[in-house]
Image (cartoon, rainbow, N blue to C red; front, side):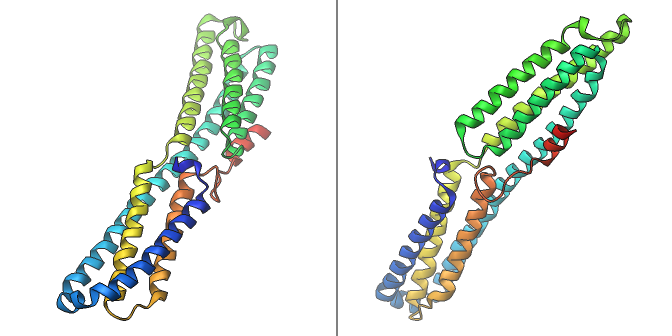
Length: 259
């Protein structure tokens, strides 16, 4: 799977493929394209522009996909921290001893959710952090669902507090599941593969035209290719926020944890 290959290796392999394509395209253009260029200059120029435009469109489309997924992951972290704070506040409805137990469990739960951010690309550690957080959540739910644990003695008030605390816990569980799903939601691999193919194809067309014109200036061609590779690196890095340079900030959860 492409997702299991480190980003630098992917981009370096792409750059190597593009370099080989450029060198081959220049040679083929020199040998076979000069006559065709002189006879159909306008058509060849239009085809080159079209291939570059198609690559640019694919870059923009893929960048939008990866950036939107990254933003969703960040938003869910903030939402989860707010949900944890809401549970913290509604634990005040419990009697002193259950409340102390609940606060301790919530503290442990938050610590595991922070660990889920910081483990990086380590599937066993990710699974362990999720499993432990769910265990702490189950204990929290057990406390909240026992009506005897509430401080209020008036039945209607106790029922209202029960509904508010369990509702906050249900919302917390929903956001936790959304965050876990968002972490695994990446740009489809066929889209990344198509992006690579278009990048190499556009490089081939550009280098062929450079050879066909009889003036194969490699510097601008390689400058364009390097810029394309940098953009693709950013796209893949956005899609792997717990692996590359773009890491999530755990500050929203850490603020709740320290509080």
